[in-house]
Structures are given as C-alpha cells and as structure tokens.
Length: 362
Image (cartoon, rainbow, N blue to C red; front, side, top):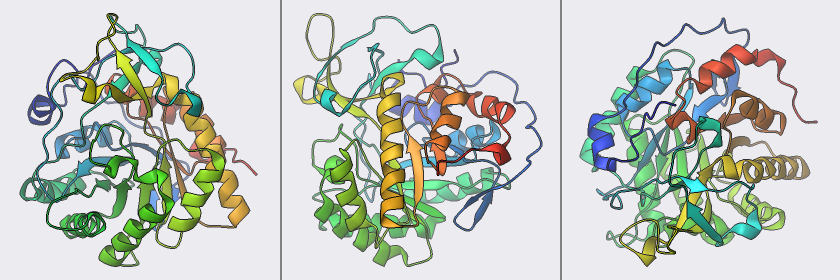
C-alpha cells in the first residue's frame, strides 16, 4: 500500500506537491506485439482514466510506471475550484453494486483496507480545473513526458453559465485542448459530484448527441473522440450509443456508482453537508457493474455492426481484472482507484500477460 494521492490532503495540495512515490521502477518486459488504437501504435492497452492524473508530473510518473494511455484530468474553459476536503473516504462495501443500488445507502469505513485490491472509496471533487492559461501549456509538457508507444487522452467538460450555451462551451473546451496538443479527446458526460447538470448528460441521448456534434465540429474529423459514461441499463445504453455514434469514435465507462454515503452516526460523510450526501463510489465494489457495462457495449457494437473503441473502466483492482475486462470485449482498459495505492499495477500486468495472447470475445 503506497498512497500516491494523499486523501487526507486537499486537491490543491496534491496538485502542487504530488505525486508522492517511493520505489524503484523496473524495466518492462520485451513488447511482443503493439496495441493498435486508431492510428497510434502503443506498448499496451493499459491506462488510467481521468481523475488522479492532475498535471504533467502525474502523467510522467504513471507513464514511466507502464500505464501507456494516461488521461489528463478533466479541464474546463474556466478555472473551477474543487469541493472542500476530504474528497475521498474509504467506504464499507462488501457486495458488488448494480444499477439497482444507485441512490442507495453506504457507510464510511473508519480504517484503510489492508490490500489495495479491497479498496472502495467515494470520489467527490466536483470536476475542478486550472485556468486554461495553466492547463494548456501543461498539456504540452505532459505529451513530452511520455515515451514512444504511449499516448495521452485529454478529458474535457463544458461549464454552464459562462456566457455560452453548454454545448458551445464543450466544443470550445475541446478545441482549446486540441490547440494545446491533445491527440485524443474524451468528453466527460458522467460525474455525480457536480450540481449543475453537466455530470448526468450520459443519461440524455438527445442532449448528449447534440453536444457530441458540437465537439466534432470544433475539433474536426481527424481527432479521435470518446465520451465517458456512467451506469445504464442495456436498452438505454444502446439508445445513447446510437444517437452519439455519428460523432464519436469510442465509449468509456463506467466511472462511479452514485450512492448516499454517511458516517456511522448517519450524517453526510463529506462536508459541507447534505448537498454532498450523494457521491460516486469507485474501486472494488463496482467491478461487476463495470464488467457488465463493457459486455453490454460489446454486444451493442456487434448488433449495430459498428466500429468504435470500447474503453473499459470501473473496479479493476488486479492485473487479472484488467485482462478479464479485455476478454469481455474492451479494446483498452483503465484503472484509477487501485493505481492511487498500487503504482505497480501496470508492471504486474506486463509481467502477467503477453499482449499477443489476449483471447477476445467472439
């Protein structure tokens, strides 16, 4: 257990002082076969989703640790402050969550689990962002910090009430990211920890597709573009995929399962109170939900005869979990929670599996 992101510190502290890593980075096994992702030839299909990679220092470290598809933390067209600390607390959740658990009750765990693979946490930041004058040049630094066979995705989000309609702000943010050097864009349509509506866009097929259209117009036809999604039933997921497919090149999910998280006395786990009662759970408890989501996306892809990238996210806590999600139909896989405590996850994957030996779903 290494705590790379210090959950007892503020988001701002981690941005300025992190990552805190101790250890030796081993040489990678010989790469037998490259992973094809659009026009990129990559060392592996392993990455970290938007969340813990706050700036170029974080991208550089995790790239060296063997995560070949890091996602730069979600940026906005305006500076946006984080929710107050704490932003993460351990959650006592022994069972695997399903769609029926969304909006249900959970209790905090008062001590850290002994093993990284057992961790379930809340994740309540409110999608903070540095000002564009900060993140735009830093994207260039992050790109330069990566090695051959690696590529960075930049996560973007629109912001309401900034003098533009929300779809226009999404488009503007995506265009700014590309101008800063983003090679792949991921639009964040799923975050239960914002109160202004943009975090639940993945549930709205019509609105999300309108925004995706704006983004595609803004970045042009050549830049690959994914959307991040949360948990949906198969029929609703297919509707969202169908409406967005004319504009996007891939779908990523899931990030969290939203629940009401309380202290043992019943009060909200996170300050300043009831407005942060419902937060996103991630880690071990969402493994099954994330796996089913990937399987559903894969079957929709086959049903539609479509060609899009499936980015499997959610609850993968071991190297075996990552391999299993690839077997379930994901083209690339990403893990955030466990990588905050086990920086050697990618190394374990590379040692476990030869990328040429993946057994894909048929």
